[in-house]
Amino acid sequence: MPDDATLLALLDAAALANGIPVDPAWRPEVLANFRAVANAARAFLPFPLEDESEPAPVFRA
Image 1 (cartoon, rainbow, N blue to C red):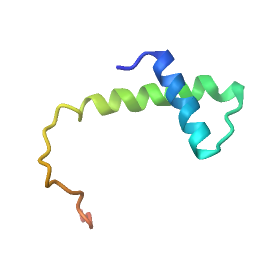
Image 2: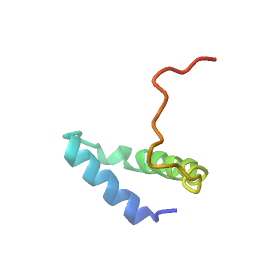
Image 3: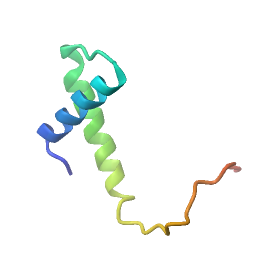
């Protein structure tokens, strides 16, 4: 899990790269969202994927 300093650096870089101003009052909420996404990603990172794996073009229930 990345620490808060790393996530804040990611936030600043992503906002700058996309030209999105981030109100300082929103930073804690955006940081909390980044933490939640990082936690969710941890469940999938160990799952092995072959180099040939591609997303399905159509998903059906």
